[in-house]
Length: 259
Image (cartoon, rainbow, N blue to C red; front, side):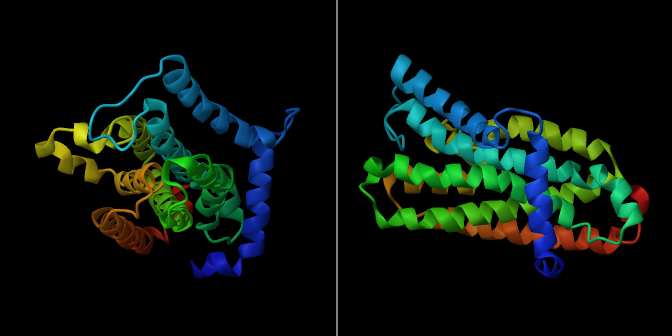
């Protein structure tokens, strides 16, 4: 973290160029970065709420299916995009790291920040869109720290996976599969209450479960994040920070050789 702070200006330049490079040559340019997820989320609302007018059952945090799905899916899309890009960042920057003594942490951070610049504003804009749901309850103030904590989660996990991928390329395949099915192992597509109670603890093995539950509580019900979700967030961040520190200590000298 100290290296990132010292090189914050370089990180800002790298992040801006990362975003520009993704959409170079397109007429819409960087606007596509926001249009693609915004249109995807809008499709959930139009299809499930307006076209099919689907409704949820009792004890659900929302009445309409699309309104419920948007909250969890946008959070999951943000997390998935950031982790996937961060996981591949060190391998992609291998040639550069072999020639320049740059801190490896710069590259996962660049990937996560570029993703956050796209998705974080959309997540915060949901506060305005869902304002009528909770009449502007004070709990909406929790959205900013929740989004920032999610960015930190994505960086810790993405950086950890990036180092492991550098050591063993199979990690990227396994992690990619886990991320593709992870949306089904979190209360994103269904309320937590619909999952069998005796197996419900398994959902907490998904790092995004506490964040999704917190977003749902804030945006759909106007309530502060549940205490158990806040505790789970802290535990996940601590566990990933310790795991990353351990992996970096053991592989720091070989990291460039792996790349």
